[in-house]
Image 1 (tube, one colour):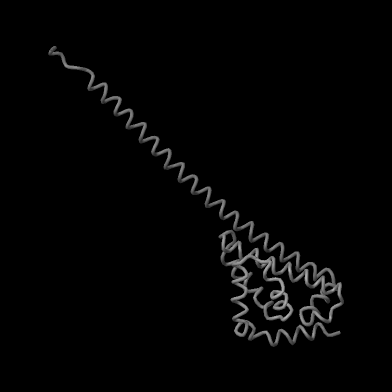
Image 2 (cartoon, rainbow, N blue to C red):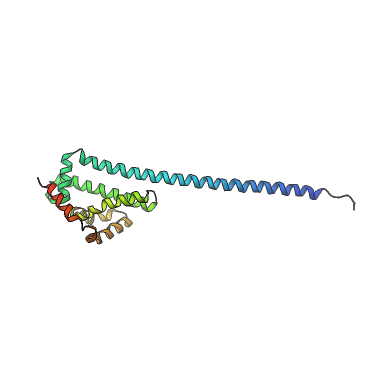
Amino acid sequence: MSDKPSTAPSSLNRLDRLSLVIQTLTALAVIFSVIYLAVQVRQNAAATRTNTGLGLYQYVQTQSSWIVTNPDFADVVGRGSVSPDSLARFERAQYSSFQTSVINLWEFGHSSDRAGTVDSDLWASFDASLRPILCQESYAAKWTRDRSGYEVRFRTYIDGLIEQKDELCVDDVEADAIATDQATP
């Protein structure tokens, strides 16, 4: 055996230290990457909610423009909301298509809310603005006829609202009177 001190342990210590530094830097890089991804996901979710809200708003505007820019169609919608049976066959088809588009839009908003892709406050106001249509017998009848064509959770939601129709439609007596006056030539 030799009395000379060995240099091997100090070399190993240097390698251990270098390995520790590399592992620490790697761990920090992973942490920063996860933080970056979380920020990106959050920003993407916010952009998706904004785009979905904008899409709902644009579709409502489109439906409104059908009525505003076409007095004949506005008349069909007004008369149909009071008494769909008073409409001519073609007018009933127009009104039924309009009702379908309104309900489809409502379903889209409902599923977007469940998915978290629309702002909850926007959805709440949008939903509240559509609930009164269930007080119109024409929409209640349309729902009864077509409900099987809608997603199960949306059907459950609308069916629940219809069960609460008495509370939902308390203030609609005056609205029905106004609609009847507007639809009467």
